[in-house]
Length: 149
Image 1: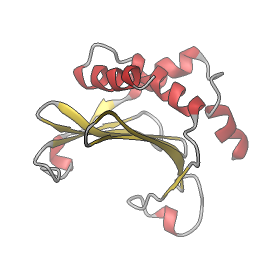
Image 2: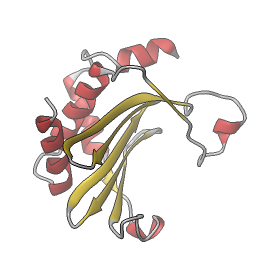
Image 3: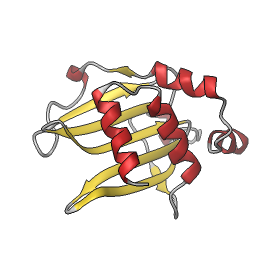
């Protein structure tokens, strides 16, 4: 399993695989999500074409407040912080690929933060999101990446 995680964490993921991952993200019906966020905004969910690949985005007045992408046991999240346009980035690992009893319950996702942001995973996530350029939400996330460079 560590080999799989190391492969996905490197920038050497094949271009066609990145394209396939981006194309597989499908927006999930809003009725399946909580109707409002804590600020009265909207939460949008995209599910990828393979297990453990999804993207959640929280919007308020069409402005992205938070997003989280999980892929094959890795996670990236960003949150707008007060007075800071660039916000706060975090990467980590989830328990989704572990086979203990807790992880068999689909709603239980535990996240262990990385000490330092995983730059390779940040770049991979950005490359996947770039395949969806032209969609307002994806463009908004890509703008956040651009501001944070």
